[in-house]
Every structure is written in C-alpha cells, then in structure tokens.
Image (cartoon, rainbow, N blue to C red; front, side, top):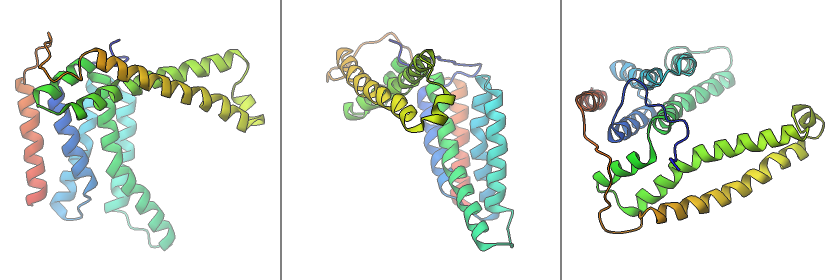
Length: 239
C-alpha cells in the first residue's frame, strides 16, 4: 500500500525536510500573534505562504477560500475594532485569533499529506536521524488519515444504498449518527492495528540502517525556500 491516497506532487516538488521546516516555522509564527507594526505584516506574509503551495497542486478554490478567511480574520484581529458591544468584540477577536493561529498549520498539514509519499517521508526522517519512537507513529499517522477518509466515504455509500441519507438523518438523527460513527470507530481500531503491523513488517522496528531506492537530495529550490523562511523568522523575532 502506498499509504498516501491521491498523491499530487504538483509543479513544485519540495523535499519532505523542507516541508517540515516550513510547517514548524509557519506554525510557530502563526501562534505568536505579535501586534507591533513590522512583525504583524511579516506574520501575515508567513500565514499566506501555504496559499502558494496549495496553488502548485492546483487546489485553486481551496487557496482562494483560505485567502479570504485569513485576510478577514487577520483584519478582525489587528485592524478592525468594534465599539458597539464588548461581548461581540470579544467573540470576534477570539474567533479570529483561533483562525489565524491554527488554520495555516492545518493547511500546511494538508499540503504535506497530499504531496508526500509515506516511503519518502520515512526516508527523510531517517536522514535526519530521528528515533524510531518518532518515525513509527508518524508513518502510521501518515497512512492512517487518508485511509480513514476513504473508509468514511465507503460507509456513507453503503448507507446511501440502504436508504439511509440526509432525509433519514432529519427524522432519526440519533440513529443516523450511530450508523455513521459505530462502523467508523470499528474501522479506526482495525486499521490502526493493521497499519502498526505493516510498519513492523516493513522493518521500521529494526535498529539497523534500512536500504531503500529513494534518492533524497536537497535541490536549489529547497535551499532557497529554507533560507527564505529562516530569514523571515529571524526578522520577525529580531524586529
């Protein structure tokens, strides 16, 4: 099993190590909501970087929606001030803060899952000398999320064939939730065990260096991206 369903490398192929560095720095800068003049705009620039990556895999509508949501949330958090109601101001500020702090990391995670094969991801972790206690859970997680998504679609199709659709959900909401959740939970337990055993079968638990045919090298575009994001991070925290 490939492990990543629907891999779309797009027109920009980045090394998994570059993607992980982007994920870490974008997450950290997004979480630290600075309100000073230069840093607040650098934070906005960093939060908009996932759009460029999403566009490279031709997810134009997703990138457009993300752009609109992030811009509105950022303006609500830093620019727009409501003087009508303190409760409304508090609710909007908290909502905008949650969006600007967590949505960029979620979109980066989506990009990594969509563009990275499991074998390549594991090889990159081994090149960074990550311990097996980290490599095995991450490899299982990487296979787990796409597999669960496909399983949920299969359950939905099976329910539709039996006449259990949204009309049934309106009349019997509790039964509909039961029919959707219980099979999915059973599948999650079964798939988790199967993926753990598959990782062990592939030799991930061995302490010896594994051989593989994947040639991972940092290209010029990787160096440019990594140096650029590190410079932005330094400017953000120094200024």
